[in-house]
Length: 131
Image 1 (cartoon, rainbow, N blue to C red):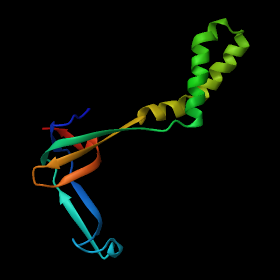
Image 2 (image 1 turned 45 degrees about the horizontal axis):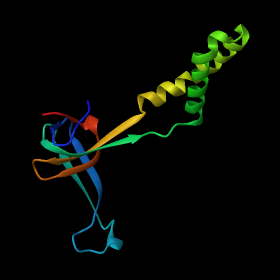
Image 3 (image 1 turned 180 degrees about the vertical axis):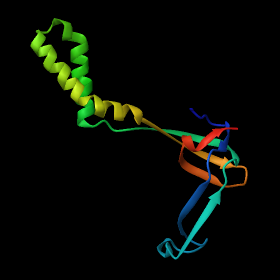
Image 4 (image 1 turned 135 degrees about the vertical axis):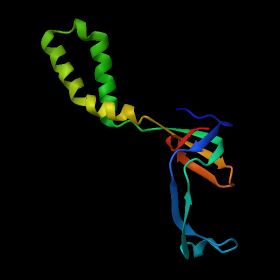
């Protein structure tokens, strides 16, 4: 699912937010003086305020897979059989890294203003369902 700005969404699962709390007006050096948690129930609705797409960095293996696969696709049928077989084996050995990269190549996070006044920022889009 791809969310867009202005779309109404519903929290898909219960969330618990944990962390340190700094009382208003306290200097930032005092962080960690208090800890707190907030629980938000699934079904709370809100509006998407921002959508951020984060492209993952390609590893050396992924770049090598792309290079070798392109070489195989473009010139494989013109290669001697032994060279082609060797290139196919090299591509096959890198397919697992390529598949893993493709599954998580694009990470989308959102900022949602919930109807109860809370704002959730940098949350994976999977945490929400269309309202």
